Image (cartoon, rainbow, N blue to C red):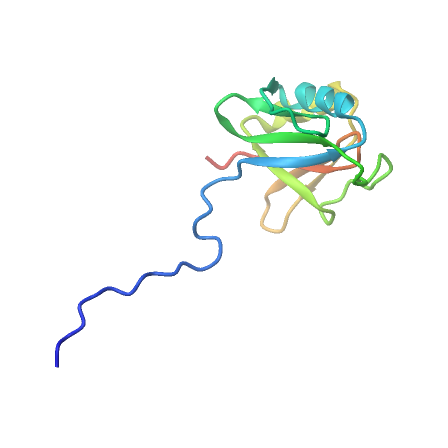
Length: 141
């Protein structure tokens, strides 16, 4: 009886092929307003974008990820009156200078909530003009 030497193909479990977050798609009722918000708050720029049927922008820093893809759509965003909450659907960004990010929100007059998570990690959350919640944490790398 011959011994089998062929290796069985490894089938990774869910998620093991993900290498980075490439972009976050943000639904908006007003693409211009959202573009202005994200460029001001993040300090990013408008990037080239294909001519999709829907209005919108890709913003970020060229060649660096993640990016934010602003999509003007008939989909309904949470709305300007949505609560700022870590329990809502949100995206978290690690920032190199947490205090500078906080100062940017204060300078822009953007309301935010600051919490200390169990274990001591600090988080700061705000909403964009459409009520999409954004979280910021100090960078870990």
